[in-house]
Image (tube, rainbow, N blue to C red; front, side):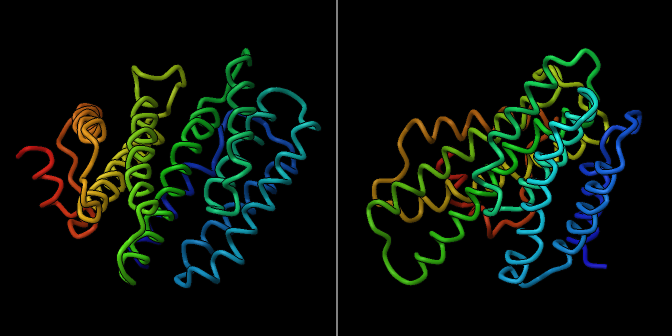
Amino acid sequence: MKMGLAIAIAAIAVLAGGCGTVETASTMRTLDDQMRVILVQQASQDDELVRQVTADQALADLAARAVYQVNSALGDSERIALYRIAAVAYWKAGAAGEKQIGDVVAAGTAVCRSAVSKPPRDCAAIALALPAAQIESERRKLDDLEAAARQGPLSEDQLKQSVLIADRMFSATVRLIQMRPPGTDVAVPTDLREYVDRQVLLSYCNAGRARAFAIEKSPAGLPAATREEYRRVRSETTRALGQEPVCMERKDIRSRALEEEAGR
């Protein structure tokens, strides 16, 4: 089994399981089971174009069905579980879920805040979905910029966009860090907290990659505010993880540019 697929399957067990103490309706169990199957298929597909027109769209369709079922839910726990299914499915749907995920997470978060009895795993997964989806959205934009840069010089607008991508990635990283105790009012289960930590590191490394790209391509370099934000996020990431963040794919973050900008 490929390492990436093994990691993806482990993540599915964390994100698609819901709260085991909640008695769910048959429709909800069916949606959860279907999401697991699609997520495994998505992780197994190497061809990005095929994945986009099959698994990604299937996840977006499943998320829409989960949202539709919310009005038929018997109580807050079922509504929250359905919002968790929709939020995770829209997150994992990539570009196919970008427009819808914000409203779904907002609605699910509102129910989590008002519910007397709230399933902690479901509420935590809802909170995780939006910043994680935002990081992946910005990574796709960065991939496009890197592809454009291989074809020739970037325009001034594209150079500005690379800085904005880095800034938005930094912001999403901070929101992920805030999901960890004591920075959150959501009770995050231990195994999901470990998944959040992996997302924090992934987010930080992607933000570093975006920042290094902006340093390399922009003649004016980075604004002072962006350089300072990088140092702040690095410090917060270190504190959250309990150690210096290490990005294994050194080629992706262009460590030399990062270290020079960080003043090492």
